[in-house]
Image (cartoon, rainbow over all chains, first blue to last red; front, side, top):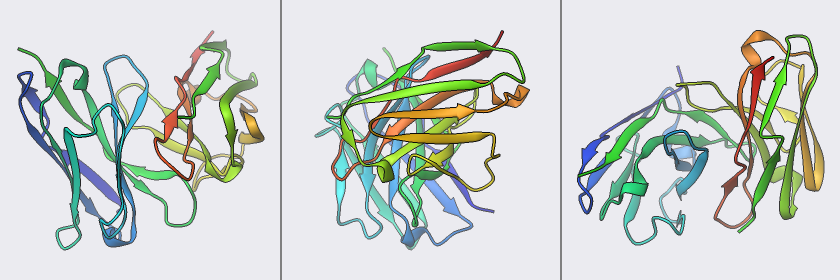
Length: 119
Length: 109
């Protein structure tokens, strides 16, 4: 079935780095634009980053620009988020989400991976 | 940046009642770029509505969306027990950042 599975979350000290992965299955990954969305504890959803199907168009929220890097490997059906210079305010559940190919909306989400930035 | 403001913050209703959730944008949003998501505790969000009024695959017809410009509405015609959770509107315009509303919690009265 169509599925996204995130991994790579954990506890990291301020200033540290972490790389999140999102493994896609059950669909043609290379057809879809992809996003990372995060949710701080007890808070709402925040869009973090977007990458086009071929990886040529990339966007970031201002809050992570210059620190986070999104990438994808279509041969491995995988999406990544390299997070550097992490701050306490980056603590959140990070979701990868697929853009529908037929309308504007994120129609498939992973279960999320938790990132905690604390000393 | 387009700011989405949802109201009310919390809606306390009984099963069978009608729920009306509002989402107001700080500037006009094309209807094709407005979506609604449902999130239950401990779960990922689920797409309910895209294009302001089109139900996503598998979404029951008690969910409906409407609106244009800066004012959008999600209506749940008759609440079922499984409908309780937090609902977010989301604008996915031509340029980032793409933003979410702060959410409306629908809770059991």
